[in-house]
Image (cartoon, rainbow, N blue to C red):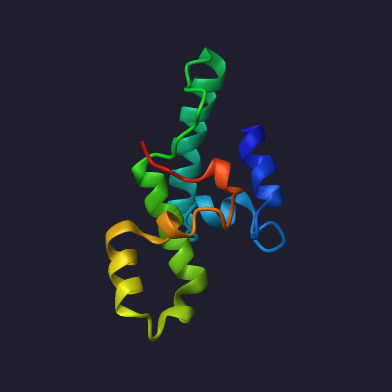
Length: 111
């Protein structure tokens, strides 16, 4: 995770958001569940060494990120353009704004 951490340090959200702000739900039960699931998967991967060289986000975790984008920035979209509304509905926030939280080389492309 060092490349992802270092790219966050160079990203635009470094001063305003931590990893958990974007990557776990804000509700207590969702936060506990996500941290438990991801903790298990990360522990297994790092203990076994069985993880890909290029880490990709799973769709479930990308959905959490997208939800947190809307939670923090939803007030900006009172009057979005039609093109922007269609893009967000079909591709989500991260497709167009991939380099915001992490530098472009470590974007959140699902696998």
